[in-house]
Length: 125
Image 1 (tube, rainbow, N blue to C red):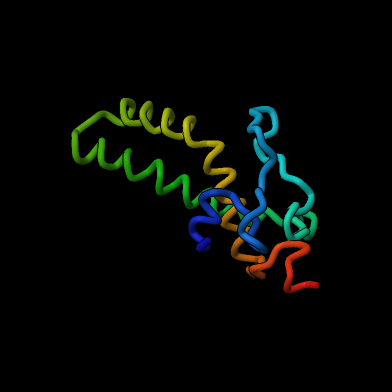
Image 2: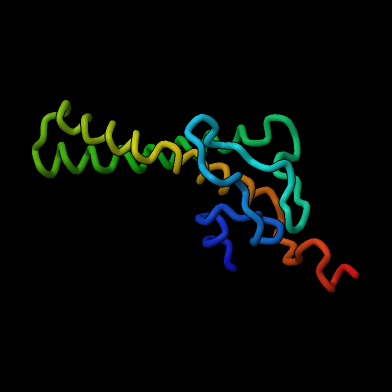
């Protein structure tokens, strides 16, 4: 599995097969993650505050996702700022949890090296 597919499907960066987030998705706890990968035992929170950097990734993704449509609507289609803002708020509400999880996935993939082997694989024995 390549890195982009691993990031978008929320897989472990160490083995690219274990899931980063607990399933099923719950609105009350959207960032609920297991402590370790069930396949390779990669620790998903190596240190307290590890995902602080994901906040900056989330900000960048949100800016692109929300600013571009707003500018297109206001400048390209001559919409009022209020009308465009309603669309932007709707897009933001729909994509909020996806961006949160995606930014965490990107951050851990930046910081954890791909090992390519699962726990208990023949290479380890």
